Length: 357
Image (tube, rainbow, N blue to C red; front, side, top):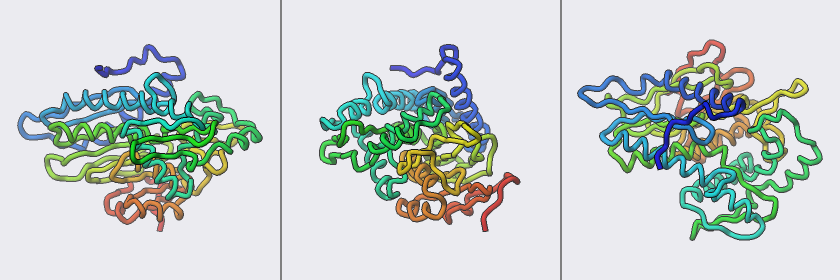
């Protein structure tokens, strides 16, 4: 199956709006990471590819002998993963898992199982601040369809009873999984962009790719070494995504940003965003506007950035330390807190923000 560039002509007005936002983010990243690769000696040139899946553009910039083959293979692999990890669909393993809630154990593909395993691990270590079993409550809010409506509080409290990461059980020996009760459900949406980057880099490792960057939504994966031996150079977006906080210099790894401005609406003068606190069922409230996490795994960086935004700055530090991850935290006071591993790597350039003392 060959992946081709998605056509905007076939989209509804709402889908086109979302697509335009995704395209803006990707183009914004591309413009700001021009310094990723300097001009090379000889005939070696990068290959760029953009495909649309997981409700966003996936952008690849690849160097190496097999760059075109790797780009196509990675795009197809990401699309196939999305089909197996989505809410529904003929090939969705997640849909089957949710359908069998309270009944049967099912056997999963190794990559889907790995995502669930990471999610469960972060859920446990974060004290439930991150939890993919919030799916029943997420459906009630229905941010994806932009209902812009706050759910009935009594109904939300009732549905919240189906949420709890311990209701998801994993069988390590055979990659099996089950949900304990009817009404339980999981949603991998918060982890799909990190999983897409993981998938792409897995393909790069199997092909003659010397260096690459892959971006999906607000997650970026960095692979290989730049020809001149310098670090990757890219931008960190402002919480609202309209500008850049500054630049950061990194080695291989994954960078994920989660913000309270994503999928949000305003009702009765109050802003509601789609990052829910699993304990309340309402949008998380902490001292943070956005969190950027750098780690060695894309799914992990996604999960941690979500968990940290729920926990707040102080409670996030021990969590990041467990995983050897680093973070950039933007508070509601527009002050930045940066963990030791990124302090010298980050350069603040936006005068509307300041470094916390």
